[in-house]
Image (cartoon, rainbow, N blue to C red; front, side, top):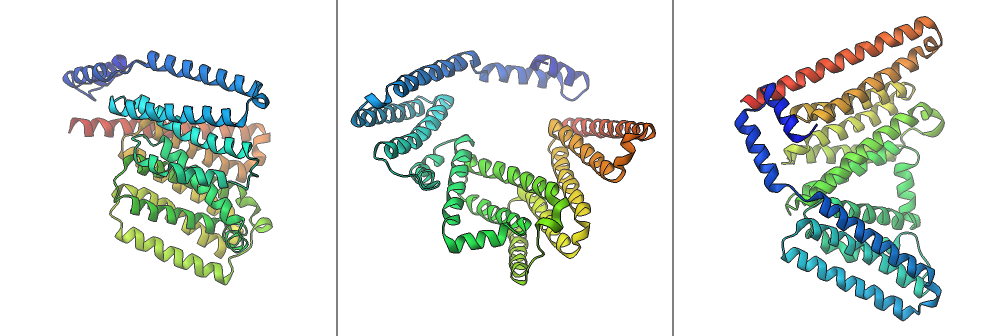
Length: 378
């Protein structure tokens, strides 16, 4: 459905007025970007780059090291100049593309120098060096793409470096190996503290990238714990007294941050981390009920996401979360009554359950649209 048809449908359902529809159309016409032009530019740049790389790769052994370095420096200077002039001429999309390419070329240059001088790779030290060199660039971008990539490289390389140090390796294994939920809670708590500190610099791109990684990690951690929760007694050990002490200190630090934090929009993040803290506590107090607690954890986190989508009028996200909730409830049904699926009566019951879930999801979506309509009219 194109924009005009969608706005017409919204106007027909009294979500917007005719004046609002025309104002939106006028605005979109003014800010409309030449997508075909940018797409062709991207494809041409991609083809030229691949062609250059293919020629270099085919004649790699015949090219002297000095020529490789000179060409690399020329590419770096060219991209740097492109970044500067695109910024000066106020072309944000071209500027962001060249900035990302410049940062990635720096990483490629580090690999090139290592290859020329036969420097043995040591884990992700090259990535950590790249993160140090490109750190200032994250303050010059308006989009979260490069800060997000930079955070991925930096934190992975830091983790790899610490894991290679015996004392730190013992600490990381102590936190993550026997009871990963403890390490997950610590990781998310530290990210919340980092988010609180970065809030003072007011760099929207960095904050958006950090928030995105926070959401990705909390989803990954929750899925990990839910999937392996069935093997709790075979894989995990109960928390030791030292781990209980760490858990208590972390929980106090988390509650203190929640108390003093001025980031209202992060309240959903705090609630999500508190659910993981509760899961860690309950699964250690009642390890035999881990299957129940893992299901409750996933459902609670999805409910928090659904509330966020509902309050911020994110209809697609709300529908996705509704489907995920329905699937998790059906997973619980399969765990409890899995044997019924092999019988005719069981299949009929399963079909009725799916119909009930579909009806309830549609009902929630209708309420969502009605709420959105009411807020728009106000």
